[in-house]
Amino acid sequence: MAKMIINGHEIEAKAGATVLEEARKLNIDIPTLCYHKDLSSFGACRLCTVEVKIKGKWQLAASCQTEAAAGMEVRTDTDNVRESRKLAASLLYFRYPQTAVVRDMAAKLGVDVQAAADSRDCILCGLCTRTCHEIVGVDALKFKDRGLARDVEEPKIEFTPSTCIGCGSCAFVCPTGFVRMEAGDGKRIIWDKVFKMASCSACGRYFAPVEQLEFISRTTGVPVSQLMTCVSCR
Ligand code: SF4
Ligand code: FES
Image 1 (cartoon, rainbow, N blue to C red):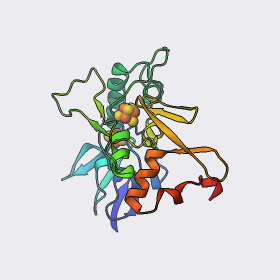
Image 2: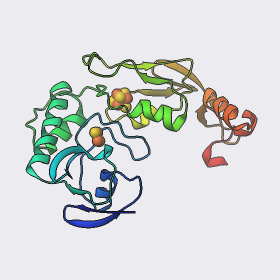
Image 3: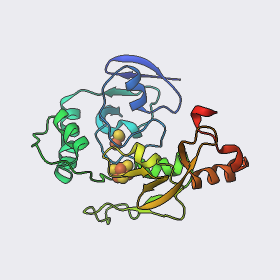
Image 4: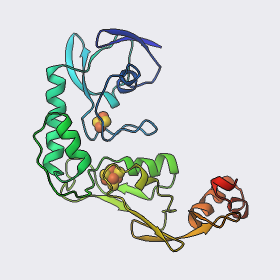
């Protein structure tokens, strides 16, 4: 536990917690687009900026990437913070003016936005790649290139069909709808790969891609034949 101050409130921060997590425990509203509580932080959107006092000076920092520390002082609602978040939102809006989640966030943070036809752009938030790697443990999605040299004009998520098990976690977590998943006729299509769905041995409902069940069987040692019932029938 580390004693620290957020917006004048003294709190006991949990070891290893971020400033964002501690601020949210106080019901302080901090905007985020690339953060997910179950994933490592990525620092892509910079919407979660706060001010942190370091060596007597207030400095801007991404709260999702700043670990809470003893003696730390944090401010989440100053003019500097608001301006910084607005700038980050403007940059995102400039690149993705037709993406609803970006437009809504930009409007909330004071950017003057225009109505536009919706388009489902990839905003390179990295939620899908981290979910695939950290939660599913499959690594079917990766950034092709990162850093200053990357081509920011085109989405650079690289999909490896031979590795993907069709679980759909990336489509679930994607905030913009760029990752599409379609289902029907005993099939699931995701990232243009077609998966055969397994039907529940009890109710007959299609419930999971065969490749996902095979993956679970490989990683747990449970035979596929024992994985053939859906959640409702277990
Ligand atoms: S595909 Fe979706 S989840 Fe993945 S980086 Fe792009 S916007 Fe984020
Ligand atoms: S939520 Fe912190 S940088 Fe995106």
